[in-house]
Amino acid sequence: MAEFVSIDKNKYKIVGILTEEDINKINAFKNRTTLILDNTVGLSSELVSKIVSDRVVFSIKGGLDYDAKEKYKEQKYIDRTFLSPSGLEKIIKYFEYNEQMINPDWNEFEKAMFLYNALVVDMEYAEDYEKIQSQGTTERSLNGVLYGKLVCAGFAQVYKEMLDRVGIKNYYQNQKDVHAFNVIEIDGKKYGVDITWDNNDKKNNNGKCGFGRFGHDPEFYTRHGHQLYMEVDVSDDFEITILEKVYDNDEEVYDLSLLSMEQLNEYYSHIVSSVSARRPFRYNLQDQPLEIKNKYLPVDTVDLILKQEATQEYPIVVILDFLKKRNALQVNPQLIEAFSSRKGYLLDIGDSNGKYRYGLDLSLIGIDNYEMDRGGNITFENGNERRHDAIWGVGVNNSNMTQEELNTLCNRLNQYVTQYLNNYISDIIKNLDTLLTNYEYKPDEWDTNRAIENGNIYSKLAILVNSRDYLIQLGLSKQEVDNIIQRITSKYNEIHKPYESNISKKDNDLDFLSAVFDDLNMVWQTIEYDLQKQITEEEFISLYSNVDYMINLFEKYITIAGDKNFKFDEYGISKEDLQQLLNKVIQDYQKKDR
Image (cartoon, rainbow, N blue to C red; front, side, top):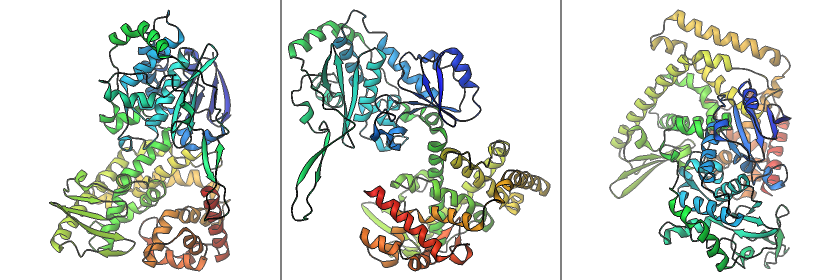
């Protein structure tokens, strides 16, 4: 049996090899739990397949040992270690497929070359990685195997895991934010290898691995991406540049040995028949529907999926704002009011990076020739002509679109939003029992994931509470509607009252406004709209720190939790309280920026 060492609430480090008895323990977990492993050595796909709980996520550290190396404590690196049980099972199956073809008589060079060749042949470089589900994480982790697509960080991570599993000592290295690669150690000597470049070179080699970057480059640590240092300007004079090499304290520049071409050719001659007989192996998760992807992807289960869900819903917010600012909103006002609480949640949690993750390609809802970007900007395509209808803040510029074009678009958007929200409310009603069962309020005990999940449930339940009359219009009886709302309010009172009595209005309002004013991208864009010009970082900090200007700006342009205009006097705080909040946000921003 393995030892489950408690690291934090619902988080365990696994010491030793998991057994069937351990799997029974895992399946019995009542809460969402993270299990941390150094690697998958000794772990079989058959054993992992016996995990039936959906409350478990694995963190396989591999080369990203965030306990040992400071740079890997960044959340973006930790995110790359997460795997779902279903995804881990499939990834280990890929490892086992290659392991069962290894000849036990091969030496470690030959085993390493066979696995290197398999990865080069099976995987493609993820040129289109932005389209992959996790927006930058999957292709940099073991999960990229599920797509058959990786980038350098993913290639180096997967290769390290393959070598670890067959007992070959190796190291994952990276020039931070530039490139990742491996060093293998055999018979006490170290050799630099870069599978990414051999994968890239296969297109000029009939899809075959040429081993051009396998252990025989005398300039290995001077190549682009292999230099384990950053060049920093240390001059105090802006007219003079003095560059100094600052080495990565988490990396070691090893004394590398070199393989001769004669050695490589000899080793390859021993494995060539197995290489030729091996059939390529590739999963293709990219073409699968979202529900399949969510089953197999890392899903630090709450955070990633709920952010994806919020991001998918956010176009409704963009469309509603677009129609409202044009005075073209024809959706039932009760429906809009009901959705207002959900809107506040989506604004808080939705992913605002990137056009298609924050906006909407309107062809997806059957409206061809239009795109809507994350600012609510409409692009209309007519042949080779692209016309723009810019919507920002409360401003509208429609001079380049005909009124007929605009009316047609607005009518279609109103129809789409009404149908979407009708279906959305119906789905909430269908899932009411599950939502009420999972709804909790324990802020003293929550991690970020649990808080996000609670916000998700609360905002959905609030839609029903705020749409009493509309639910009747949808066909429910008054008694059914009263019963739904009674169940929700009873659950809310049951779990919130013990906490609400201990929280002052001032503390509660400060907590809420800190989330609002912390959205610096939104504030920056609003200031630029207000001034009708772009501003520097210095100008932004100066204006953001001016409490009177910020109050006026928010009251002029910002709506809170739906369509309610921001009014400072409605909050139980003073200008001095808000000034302290603004100062803290800016201080945190400047620290992070440095």
